[in-house]
Length: 464
Image (tube, one colour):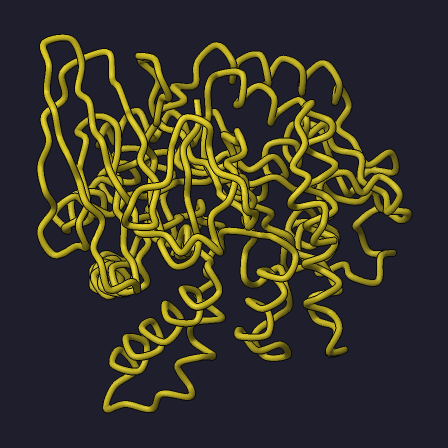
């Protein structure tokens, strides 16, 4: 089972399974093509200096050509295949529909110098833009350069970065500056072969007691929908609120109604915008994955799903940074039971994003004796802001059972982006080498993950 995404000169955006020489009934796969001279045995060079592939599906699937896009195909219930190219020739699409399966032959006019072999890879590495350095210290183009240099493919665009880019695009209003900045950021990412996988975080939205303020946030979300469309992403991340109790309600009916309201706005967009709801481990009312999943099921919208963040899950059920041990009283048992519940109850089709990071065990509990203690915020938040680590960095103090959580989601069939959303004190270091250091650590972490999962990507290794 192989699908290709080439980064130059053709950019293929797909959550679409390709099956070479056989029928299959699997959906939701993403693969990458890396630079080399070899070509898939199942494909062949065409006179148009491209390659030809045969795709079969085990059921008849209607086809619709998308308006407003480069030549592409929409396969309902499966995903979008969109080929956009800077080449002078457009992809040639040949369709055949038989009684047993839908068969597509297509030719993409690739430059032979950039043809490459496909790697069977169901998951792709991404990173949050903020995780490469804070925006007021490290400019976005340099951070994107480092992401590309170390083989990361996707970017979670942190709103903070977009706001700082917008300062270079003064407009009549803040909104017009953000819109201009979004166009610029999209160009920056396209030039580097990076995909913006989400815009985040839309913070402190659900459950506001002040309903006039709620309406202001809804208006703000309408702007975010415009920005997402310009950026080329169809995903916005909403973390659970950690505002004080006197500002937000614990009434689930209100919380669900608020979240359904933005989901309906996103569904009206073309293409629809999805939302990933994430429980922060220090959230005021919603602080476990079980609570966020319950809300997702109650919102009951096709474009409203869950973000599985290994840090926030383990940071609640396993870790307690305010304790001398760094763990909760029954950490091992409670964590194991939580992971088993995840396996038993989660519908993987509603997992819209997976974030994978660890965190360091503190030498001094996060309390009055710790230099980073802040009495105005919860210990888990202070710990999260300064001490997250990339996966596999046990030498730096990593100790959370994040691999167990990730494996549970992967075993359920999750296929897609696995993103490193790091918060760490190093990000606020003004040293110019910080973005490179963090990007390299992220790449090493990804290689360790592939090894631990029994997979390898030699092409990515050569970038380290």
